[in-house]
Image 1 (cartoon, rainbow, N blue to C red):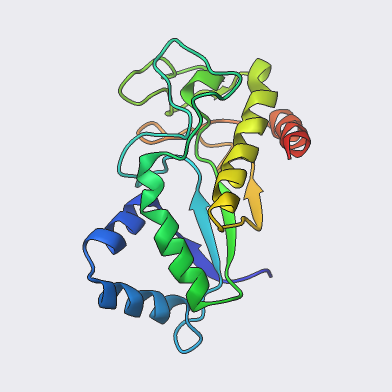
Image 2 (cartoon, rainbow, N blue to C red):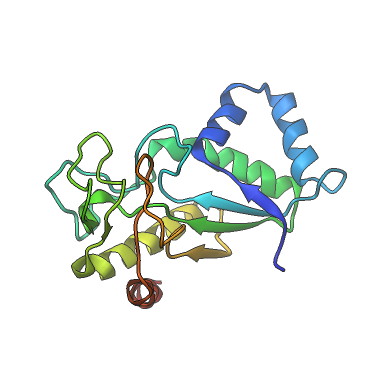
Length: 192
């Protein structure tokens, strides 16, 4: 067992940053992560929009039908501006703090299948990884980790896909079979 913790979505970070004053936010973080509180030390961070996010987004959203195989449009989405200070505060409260990244969906332009052409959901609902973009998506995942590391928030680990055998119909997700996951793991390892 590596640790005990919870998940920090962009919506939870938004509420902590905007609906709590600084002393209440500090008290909450200390109650959860401090050694005089619950002493949680592991957080799963969705690295794209998740089931309870504030919006549909990834870190390389472009207008359909475009693609961005060189990841020139990559940048941490503004929805994650709330996460950075909250993650720093969690780590300050517990020096044993560790972070696990997990994607709910790849950017819509690297996917194929149902809903990938929907401009409202940006192609994040349903579908699967387009095998011709496996290396690009591996590079994307490595860039996410690098973007957080530059901000002094290193990941301990990432998963290739949250719930890879489940395709939600109302929030971001993506099907990956075992072969796709293995190929993506190899591509991501090369990108690192």
